Length: 175
Image 1 (cartoon, rainbow, N blue to C red):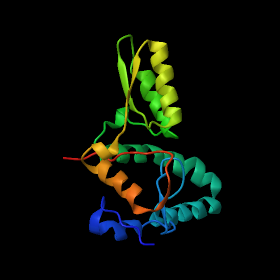
Image 2: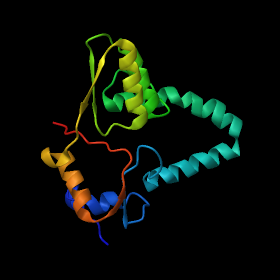
Image 3: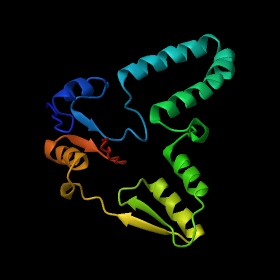
Image 4: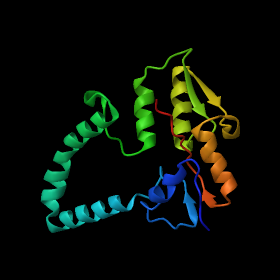
């Protein structure tokens, strides 16, 4: 079966070809595990071999020393202040760091969608309960929203492709 993707348009075959995924499946769970582009897999293999040649040097000196440079590069790419930018091991840790740094108080509101990842939603509920803030849940109804979220989900449901969706992220428009 050939899977079309009107969200990406005519560039889709070249975008899709960058991943080594089964072409008969639609993989939507990039947030939790796996499904990285082939170029990333190749570079990971280069790094693994480098570590295996001299683990102490690579893990203690090279990689830990490179974190600061990588943090600055990532912050610059995102247009962020490097002094306020940090790497976190996963989305749950990042959301917790942000929530507990906000100084939430009585009368504050935190907006989430009804598709929020469970651990993230739990963190929001917990932080709001402790602070006296309110969680506001916005239903996600893609068929009623114009733009990219609607096009991508309409494509998914109408494609007939086998799909597994545990974490749904919606790209934002850049203008």
